Image 1: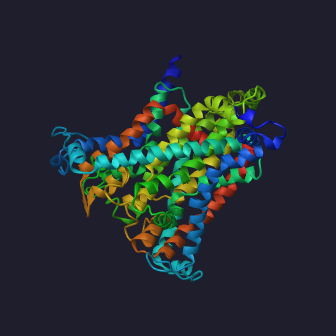
Image 2: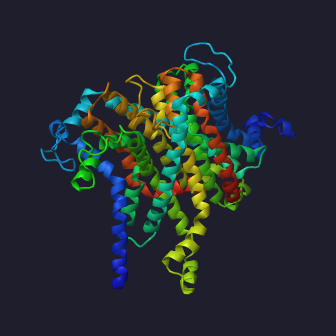
Image 3: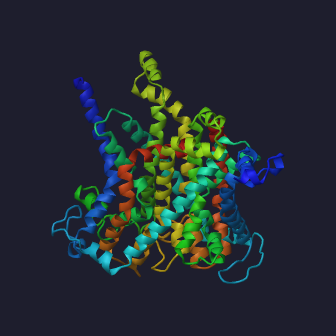
Length: 312
Length: 279
């Protein structure tokens, strides 16, 4: 009906509906249009806050007070503080140990899951469970398991005769507390490692193993010369992912130990919250969280080299 | 099956037992604790692995009727559903454009999405709290609805890009030769084929927002605005006193929605987990 009122004489005279329709069919227009909501979101709520974090870190911002530019003073002050030095060290110890355990246990678990199993679905379901349940809630369970008076871990250890009563105070002693937070991180991250590595294992052609076996390779040789080299790509990606998310972990430490005892388990995220929000020193808090940035950059760089190679 | 093969298979199951125990023991112990009476819970001579003095639902009923647990769960549901729905729409069109269309700076935008996907929430929560204040959303669950898409959209876009690439271009081109517009082709042809991908993205978005903690903890604090995870972890610990029975009951109950989804959609979780990382 619209057509009768607007005689179609030239392209520019098309009725607006038809014109919009035609415009939307052009990739150069539809593309930006479709990506703009995501783009706006990222600019406003990721890029802009990131710039704010940069500014905060260079200022003496304090909650509820005007701030002034102070240059690199926050970063310099942080280096002089014991709490920060301890946190810096903790972050590497925590990430290093957690990832090492996740790699070794993840590969072992994936190898087992790749065997002929009777209850395959159920077993996978159980393995994946720690990854699915809200961390904040499952960590509560761990907190109870490590409770200084009623720890089921210690009870079991004592019952089996491997611990002397009353057993370690897991969350109250320096090295035990670090062990506990690493253990919980491994527990929570293992499913991701195992399932992803399993996907890598499944994609290795069976013929390679048959050929290796024909050449007289035993199980260990087959693992070392066939499985591991072919898993390298998947392993690299999993480790890179896990690096950034382990390094920036917050939930586990915040709930289990709150960074204690005496800062011995603080990570960048928990210290930055304590200083930035609980003590109100926004500037310093932002500076601490920015220490996650170099790690992020490294992971992004390495991932883009790997991931781009696969995806594009 | 040969005898050796059979025993080999049994051995594999035995080797799996420690891993499975490690994975599910915390949940077993949580559930068990939530069903114990306080008297047994705080009895140092009791066996922590058994319920000897009879199970009780008293912690659950206290949690439901004497705390705001139901409100927290409602808040969690509202935030999760809206954030998931919005993110899914935004991510679907962005992913389609990135996977299929040629336009200015498409490559660098794809990279941008990927980089954002890797940005940890703990890097941005301090300045975001200020942004939330400026938006007038301080201490409101709507702050979470607004901020959760910052990590949901990049994740879902990345996941869906992978799925859209697996839809053959020819199917879509056929439809367009027959006179369909690009949007019609997307709606009628591509999306129905990509339904497994959409389900997967929706499940992950739901799980990620249900499980989110640091933003919820930072942006909300009043009892009528907080989500289930924050409510259970902050309101049930009064001062230094932990009400362990209630805490465990809360942890169990607040995990129920995710567990239900999980039981029904296990295979999607498995495929999404690997796709998110490997694709």
